[in-house]
Image (cartoon, rainbow, N blue to C red; front, side, top):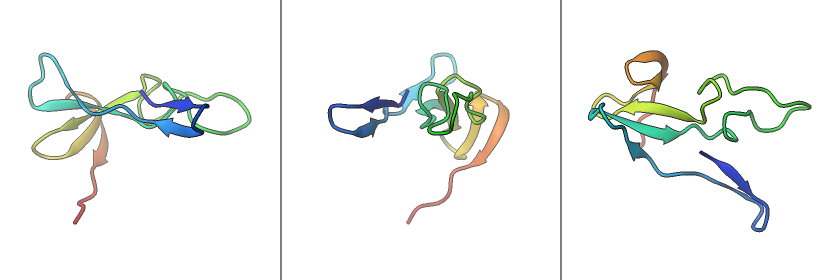
Length: 80
């Protein structure tokens, strides 16, 4: 899960991880701050990951979801 490195003044993101029991999916760092949205006047749970700090990607299709096989969040944009 992403976190703030105050010594270097930057956000640190975690690399993708395999999901045990779901070989076609990988766990991604949502990019929020451990389940809390960045900025704002008060802490608010991230709407993309539901507060878990992680989202999941189907490896072959690129579909993103809150958990393997459910609550779809869209699809990754193609990069050239």
